Image (tube, rainbow, N blue to C red; front, side):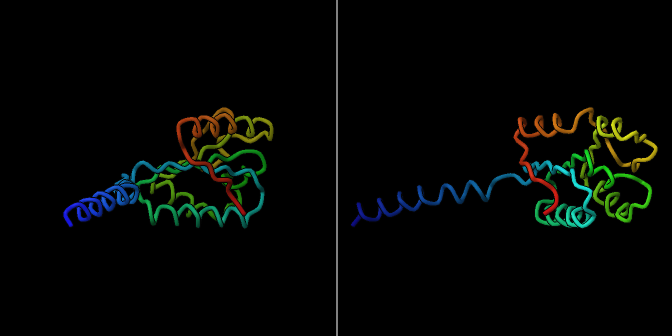
Length: 142
């Protein structure tokens, strides 16, 4: 009887290790980079909702949105109906990184971009670097 009890206890301990380690993972270890390159304003709205959804579950997660190519409209001041949502997300720690290469090719200046923006020389390199650092990658939009 003692052997059966011992083996049952040993099996339970071994079986519970994976679930225990998942429960004890620190919340601040989550890091996600979002890639935005579409001109679709519906995708812009979806992205702000998705960012808020992640922060609701993981409030200390590191989130960065890398914006380039046709997605640059998301960060332009003129006619931007999402400015308040973007600013609120910045207050929660979300980084919005705008590609300077895209700005140059589209003749966009920093004064045309929302003031909460940060800048990266090349968006695709920023995406690669984040992934090399272990960040999860999500293509923004649908």
